[in-house]
Length: 474
Image 1 (cartoon, rainbow, N blue to C red):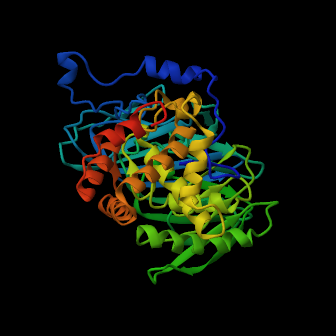
Image 2: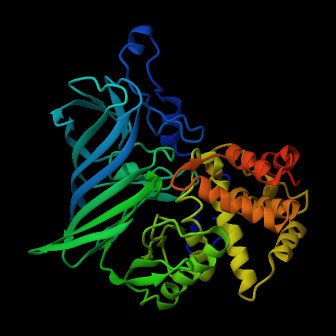
Image 3: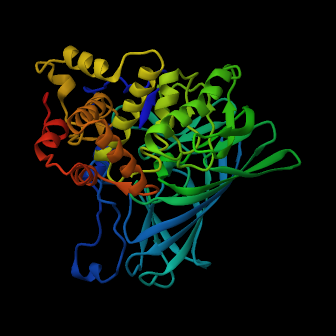
């Protein structure tokens, strides 16, 4: 899902970097829930979503419906609260949220003070009264402090990244917990309201639609509303001295979409990139159907992180993006944002499709045809190139490979090989069915392979085993 700063391809591998100690310790000391009979009777929610690559994040026992995040920003610090509306999936005498850093000053559940404790990156909440199964309940967490960034297993930075004037918060895969408490798993999508109050010289970009921008004295409150379900990994806020460009664009389906774009210092107006945005949306709609978001735009700010990110509605670019990167992140509004992976090990479904759409764009705009590109990549990487062919796209050994060539290029190769096997008409019918069937939800590799067999009427076990699960050239 991440594209690098100036390319739609995967970031350079950091294959020999040891996993950061914090990740190793977190996995080793993971508490997955009660283990004794007496503890089991307590109806505590699990402290893990069970993700194989990130077992220490995510939580069980509830399904988040909505986040209302409200905070003030000044002098690199934030102070505010998050109200989390959830539906209990079991009786809950306690439950946990993911939160790294920050100082919690109070917690309530349905307006009543609740007991709470911190345990590593978990905020464990014990309400005064147990929450009944199927009940919708509201948890409000008040907090303050200077948010932190985190280092991913592949060595890159995410989370809250401070700049000279402001900050940018990027959440993929698990950085959202650095600036608001949440259920930090892609399987639990929710809608959002974000209200951030900043000094009037700063602008605050985020996901969804701009509801209001209200100035009081020397400060301005920006209210953003995300109306379509979104994973925590895609939640974004970026505060800086931005130039703000507002307008509307037309889609291929005849919709008029509001657009808010934010361009940071030293990047000019990015007029070329901003004008490319509606073209990329209309182009992708030809293949995939209606644009699945309620608005669009870009956020661009020079940031030394080495990647861009498909934050929902308006992607974030850490430098002036090239055409391939814009197309790549626009394609993610369908693959990754609307249809999200349920488990991080299935991320090839996001990156493979976005990379393939890059190839299709290039082919229709004077570049190499997709079949020629496919053959050229195979020619450059014979069976002896074991580093390229390993690991397999759907069988990543650990989180270090989450943004590897295996998910970007190998993922796209697998999709084009499927297109050659099924034929163009059946393949694109499959893809459109996929984005329609799972719109606003989550899915797995097994869901995709099952749908491919259903739409095509063919047994494809051998094909998918070779292309998705074996760490060698098919």
